[in-house]
Length: 336
Image (cartoon, rainbow, N blue to C red; front, side, top):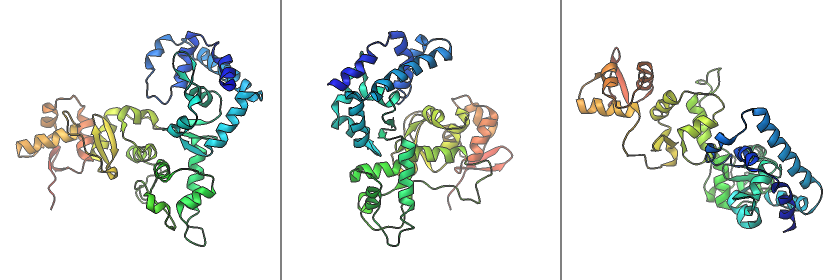
């Protein structure tokens, strides 16, 4: 394929040392899969940025030159816009999975990460980028309420250029923060349900959404359970790992589906029942086994995992499973 040959003209010149730097961006969607390449990276950030910038300039130059690669990229943009599942894109255009940097760097990674042809994130390919596709979707759904007559969401989205199957639309809407079934896509509607409950204006502080609100929005956008480390990496603000872990375990909107991995409770995913557990869950088990209220210090002394006194206090005060019956003394809350 001539387009791939043009791309290989650039990528064949990449050295192993440069590849170590480029992989940080090429494999950005693989959740630290190439963390070990860090030992080969140039020490100075300026050197890494220079390598990435030079490679990106070379890739974009050959795309913009109007040759076979540029023509192919134009067809890819037309095919994808505004959004398409990455799996369908790769099935439709298998050449995108052809390695252009040995041993296994596929063409789509170079075109998406350094060519600016499309963006790939959360399993979706989007033109020009995912944020624009999400904004277009929200604009379309918001327009349902302004229409003179109720309109089927699928019809509205098709008018905005979306060419997704019903199953893909359901998944895409969930990514955008909406909940819909396939039948609802074709029923005249004025709105769609939000995929998660937002905090009411009366409870929202002037400092913005809480950490757990942000996690709920992140999970709704992702559409899949996420490990705590991945949650912390994606949040815009920095949070301490231990306190956030305890707050997620104490919030009824979330369910732990694997060690340190959380999903939205509204997804009805089976909770994790393996060994371990949060400090809150272990405190509940200790109190239930003892059959009496326990003091904070007694609970902390009997936990298997180390936790600061203040961290445990915050976790126990945050959960709805426990109630304080005396200073720093807790028992299990009983349902009436």
